[in-house]
Image (cartoon, rainbow over all chains, first blue to last red; front, side, top):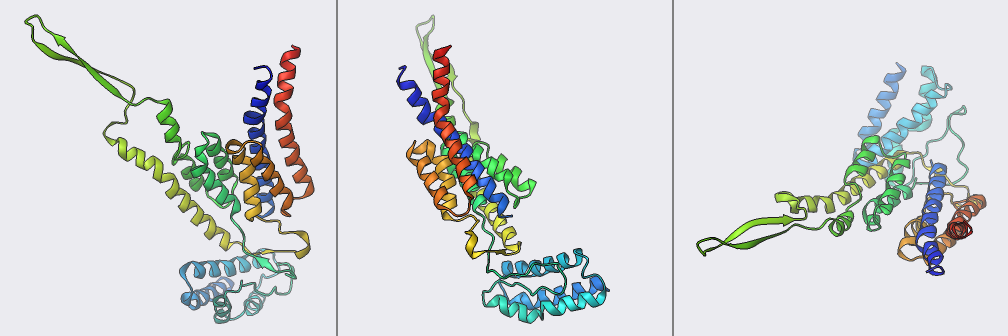
Length: 35
Length: 297
C-alpha cells in the first residue's frame, strides 16, 4: 500500500488536476488573444 | 443630417442585401455599420462632407452585396485618417473554438462527474460571445450536465416498496402496511429524466448558434503569414480537451498527447507552452511531495 499509494495519487489525482489547470491556462490565453 | 445620411446608406444596403441569406444579410449590414461607427467614433469623420466621403469609399451598396455574393469577405477600403488599420495580410473568419469546447464539456464532458461540467462552466463564463443570460442558461440547464443523472442514479437508491402479510386474531391473513425506502421523482419522473438528458444538448446547440452569429459579426482577423495561426483550430481544441478531459479517461497517455498537440501548435508562445508543461510537471510532483512530507512527519 505504501508503494502503491503515491503511484495511484500521481495517476488519478495529481495528473488530471494539473491537466485541467494547464488546459484552462492555454484556453484562456488563446481566447484572450483571439479577441 | 449626418445620421440621416448613414441611416439612408444602411437602408439601401439592407434592401440590396435581400438577395443574400438572412444570416449573411444581417452579418453584412452589421459589419458595415460597425465600420461606420468606428470611423465616426475615431473623430476623423465628423462633419457631413467627411461622412459622404466615407460612404463613397465604402462603395455602392449593390457593389458590396455583389462582392458578398461571390463569397469574399467584405473589407471596405480605409478612408483618409487612422480609423482602420491597413490590411496587408489576408483575413480570416473569427473562430469559436472556446465556445465549442465549452459546450462539449457542458454536455458530453459531464461523463466525468462534476469535474468535466465544472470546466465547461469556467469556459462558458470566460467567453465574451455570450451574454449573462446565455451563461446563466448554460449553467442552470442543467447543473452537473446531462450525464450527471447516471451518477445520481448510483448515489441515490430508487424507491423499493414492500408489505408483509399479517395474521389477524380470527385467523384471516391480510396485507400489512406498505413501507417504502429510497426516493422517487414522482409522477413526472420520466419527463424530468428526459428533460435532464435532452435539455443541455438543446441549450448547447442554441449557445453555439448564438456564438457563431456573434463571431460572424466581428471584424475578420488579419493573419500574419510569418507569425503562426494564433487562433483556435483542431490542434488547439485537441490539446485542451486531451489535457483537461483526457487525463480522466486515459491517464498519463492523454495529457502527454495534449502537451504534444500544444507544442505542435503555433497558436501559443513558447513561454505559454513551457508554463503548461510546468503545471503538468507540478501535478506529477505534488503527490510525491505530499507522500514524502507525510512520511517525514
